[in-house]
Image (cartoon, rainbow, N blue to C red; front, side, top):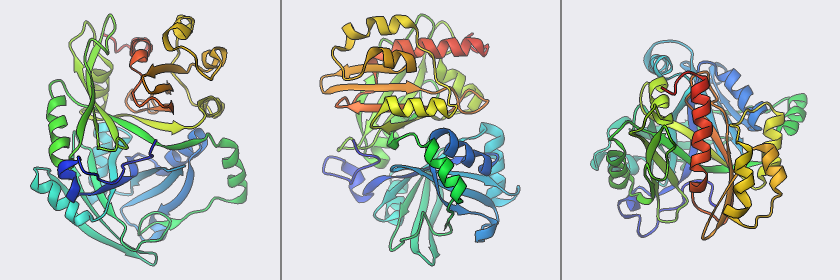
Length: 386
């Protein structure tokens, strides 16, 4: 499975003149970047690759670039409350810590920006040229759902550690030793999931098809994703090569408040609900993450009693999956293993999925009921299943 967005191919339609290569990084706006960087390194095993801040000449924010395999994150926080730093402060006040930018590497950021705006995208910021001793990059941005933006990044001749303005920020010897102990075997970004408001899913499906040339890959409705109490609808958008896949969720009518509604209430609007990170050995990865203090949703014993009859033969031992709380699902191409963390913030908003694919290109449809019941138990504990 690819780690990001593959090159534009015939069949991507309008995306041909944008020519998206991959997800360059996911940027989080946070209240304290130094603490967030420490968390992602020590809880999820990311490595620090670069830093931008006062020491590098940046006056409005501190930012750390992190990497696990081919997955790259940036955690950034404002220094003050004027200009762009002020906009960051307002964003944090409204949403709390969370995803701001799904940044896309393209062949030509200025051309991609012009094409997207011509198709109806609202500009977030115009093309700007970034230069340092390592070379030049161009960056521009468009607005998407809620306060999410998509940056377009073209690297030109840049050969530095991350982007112009960032400097390599190696760990000390002792930190490097500790980092090796925290490694969890995460290798790539698999997908990310948007939560939007009731009735907006079709609007954003049409937007991604018109602006970026993506197509509908899969759909799930309230018959697929429901429990006794809650339901939601979801459409998965993808490029022709299927290397970019991301679901868009909206709530569906139910007896009680769904996970999408809870997210939207506490996030104060649409945003990125969860990020799925790929591993080649989920047993090893989840064991490491648990040892690092990462909390996961609990799965009832009855799920594992029914598992062999539902998914058939698998390579992993059922007792090992049961002990770690890992879910399994199968389609006609193979099977996948997945698990979901507790929310990463005090607000019940962003969480992570850890996924291993053994041929299956789906999203665990057979696990939806068990997963949603687990989420509902947590909602009930928080007093939000009403």
